[in-house]
Image (cartoon, rainbow, N blue to C red; front, top):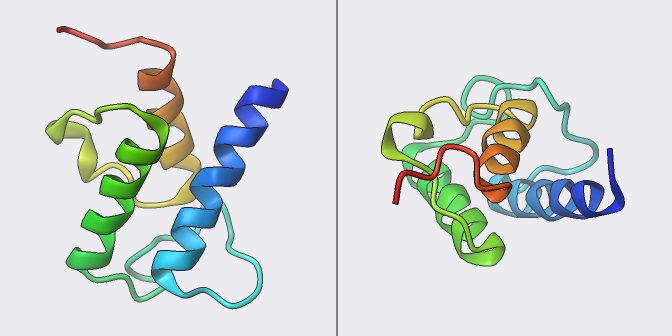
Length: 87
């Protein structure tokens, strides 16, 4: 993992922790809804903040896959690197 990737992951983690109001550590594979009691509004806010703060656009068909930190990292990194851009 590069320093840039580590920085992006830290920003994503900070967004998720803030929006889900997690105290302590958040597990990378912990399900946002089942383990951290996220509701649909908090999930939308996470995606919106990630897109805005990192300058990316996540395709609608991938939004439901962003259910934990690990999967969110993968999706964001794929679109941040330009992979999957159809525009």
